[in-house]
Length: 549
Ligand code: GLC
Image (cartoon, rainbow, N blue to C red):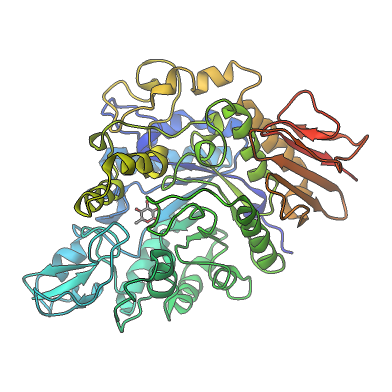
């Protein structure tokens, strides 16, 4: 196995809008990140992935870009970016930018031109179908509800948008579009950034027959079989690698909706020369019910373990995994996979231990290091996210029980992860001196960085110690992985080993203690989230790392 810095490193993901505001306008900004670099570095993380900060009308909070070479003035503009990059370089921290090139904003110059006429030089930068305003080209549904087709009166045809209508999909079949993208990538690489997280990159190659999807096909399958993994996706990624990426020592991680075990290995194989890692969503869609994310079902824990085991196996010899349990698109990890009530602290530590002991590069999402939780607003008006709001409208139109639906929103809304970072017990959690763009979670007086700093037993201090432990033990990075109890309903136990050492990691994913006879007797428990440890049993949400050799 090849060893390299991005396998050994740890990523901290920042949602800049919600991290730290230095101007009082209620929006986080890049100077806010600079202000917090001491804190970030104190965690032991080595790379920052920042969500999009480019110029954007913010229909989808920056995932709709109107100028790929400009940093939005909301975040401090280009000078603030240059300051951030310089400050990070001084500290040896790597910067991963978000690259959103499956679609642009409809306010991008390309689209403004493209929609004018069929013979405009930019027209073919986007994807057009149909010619009858009464007849949609097909039955495809947008990820954010409603048809993927939007009528353009000037050219009397529809354009494709897999996300909102303000996010028209780029036409990667057009070589000029690909050259534009490579130019953008080159621009940021020449500025000195260290890599990219590529937004919904599995969707860039379309199935141009545009045939209807079977009405009964679950959306997860539509994603995999119809929208993602299109016929030329690997060709495009190889081309991008060859033309720009391969010229720099960088890291790439492709966001891969619809990428499962069948497709995943090809995207990240060392031989294929496409991407270094993907974010698959097998474990994050695990609680989606028949009607999708707002129709949640209980998590199948055995399947959860199987997903990690199978992905580990699939990439054991060729490729590399990303290890993450949440991000800005999902609920808070302690609320979703742990217990954010009576076991918040312990279960947040357990989840940290999972992140740091599986084989792959760990991604820590801002606020998880202090155990931030979901919010539960009483009214939909307090939610900002376009996906949540659209889902709400669609549910209303379908005559759903909206009280029940609000519960699903509490459980699944992307805004759960987007509430401002809780820095202190001061007003607005110390995030801003103004009015935050999105409400702060009420629990900030108890859950915040300042309180965690002052508490030796905090989740924050645990993260720091655990990250240091991982970095000190290459076995936890590169070592083999074996799941020891694949069918246990509550325990997750695995071995990590190589020539240098053998570790046994065991977690109790539940509110009840569990007996386990095979806990190693007389062996040193090197790390754990309880100070007292029973000999043959694990306490609720207990994690232990034993060193066997
Ligand atoms: C990705 C982003 C998400 C965004 C979507 C469309 O899934 O993570 O936030 O809404 O792509 O760009």
